[in-house]
Length: 170
Image 1: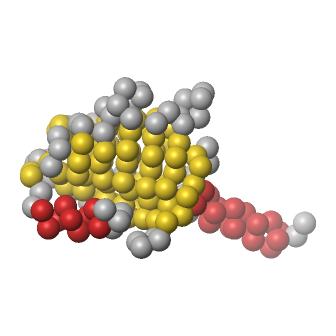
Image 2: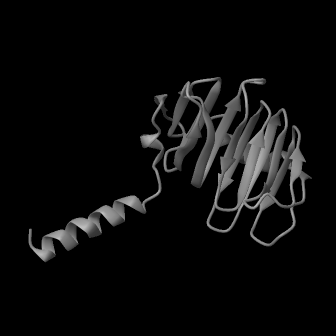
């Protein structure tokens, strides 16, 4: 092969390797596409359901031998999560936060500058990516996580909750 061909192939492989995982590539889970609004629902082993907005970039970071995800990474947009209580540890990692769950229903929304987490049912522990400044969210509470900023839990106003849940057809 010529040097130019090798360089071109390496460049393409590097570009592909640095792209975020799209929701459509989530393996080990059965996928159903929904409309109004457009989103994909993934039924995963061990009582985990992930509902991703159409443009959400996500991927499984770690899983148990039975294919049950334990860590999911979300780098853009929103993810609605349902975890069956007692089904084992599960957490969502974003560029700004870690949201660890004990069996619950919650939403993670990621932008370039922050991650917002809102809990509908159960409890979610949220911290910065280094594990610092952890807070515990219960139903109706949310938090915004930005680098270098302290975490403050708040009861979100009904309009904000409705706007967020409408993005998932709820």
